[in-house]
Figure (cartoon, rainbow, N blue to C red):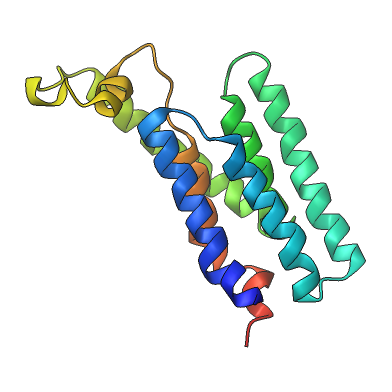
Length: 166
């Protein structure tokens, strides 16, 4: 049962969050809640100790606090802050710094690509595609959930979750 969460459910939820952010510039609360619920089920199935459980909770709360601090002045979106906290809950403290550096680089590249695309006229055949027009609009943000998700998925198989699989 744990394998289903680790190999299928969590990666699928992370991919859906990234695609949702790309296409709608939102990360639905239900996706974040599904990640939290999946953790609540998978942690006991994994035999995670109470101390490890507490450190995973701590990682999620620390990233949530940072996310709220970055959301307050409008530097990131609320969905990004919530998704980052849910992903940190799953990752725990061990790969947290590597994940932050990785999504920072990925997010920087994504931001530069979006800014470059916005500096060029949108081809007429794409103006009727809502999500592309929204992404091209300079008043829109950058769908940073893509970078958060890509960073988490890149490190996913190196986490302790995979060490427990047989």
